[in-house]
Length: 461
Image 1 (cartoon, rainbow, N blue to C red):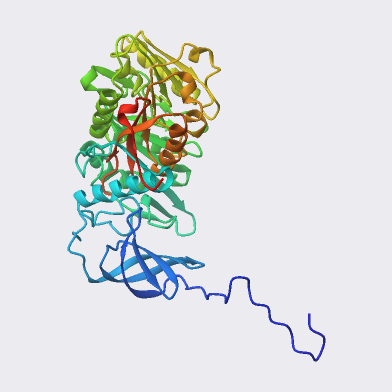
Image 2: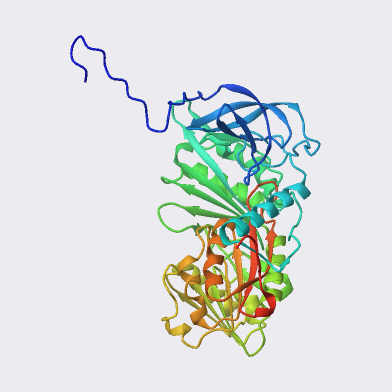
């Protein structure tokens, strides 16, 4: 510190002059240059990069700042001065406030193009490859597709108010919603009357969240943090009877059915299969695209009657049971023990005798596992968003000649592809799966082969 009477020293932060932060709520007129991978508009102004929700390329908009850090500003569109020719009126009245469907203002065909670009760019930038063949996008209806949804429920003690709906965009606020166009029709009917039911509860402060599911039947799971009042439980039971929905309750432990004898699950009709399911289990939310995805995976993997196939991250048996109808044997592995148990039950109930299920830590090498010693002709894996890096590092040791990778994150797919290329695999085919229309979320499928006939085309290496 400078001594008394002497001028103090002024230090400049490393990297240059400190940039003053833009306050949240400030409005700014911007020209949007292009779209980011998550569907937000990108603009550049005064050395800052703006990411603007609800904006399209070549538009002039007024944006409201949500937050700013360094040279990055996140904002949302408040007004469109000059609209893109691509812009359409969003089908949902909650667009722009609800955080669930971020690209409704973009026509569905252009949503698919956005997702295709994201996959292409990740494979090119991270793995420096492109497939020998691009597959057409797997897509279904752009609305009315979602068979599972979680409804946010929160008691505001200060306002003495119960909020029911979906999370707001870029916020923990709850947008009151009693209709949702992306839900399948049976769940739309439940959603229309659910808020009124919950608002009438004697003890709304004990409510956690609600999960809806539609499969072989409809189900409603209510999460509660304390016992329900008897009157509230009776109202809930009556509501489910009126809507022909099963009631499930979850306190401290696992979800429990109100009527245990009622079966619940979903059908894979092309294979004559029915998989048992209970709320909380992982399930693909888009039934039509799920069926098309399984058909494509089986076609690409093309197992023969004399081959042994490995299914990693198998869940309830969504891929393993259809695969068992084509292969000599299917070994299916999952990290969550309760899912392994349910998958094994699904195999027995469907009369599938050539599929066996194991629990294993899929963040560890698998070659030393007893069930892996015979090796496999083909591998299918469907990992979570963080990918399957440790598995793919050693997949060649299993002897697989073909591998189908189903991904919900193109970035980790591209990263894992680098490891597969090191082991002599080539990217034969790839394409997007439109599991979540009206969002920028990308799912993809890729086929890797050891055959030199299907060599990938390098880009920039």
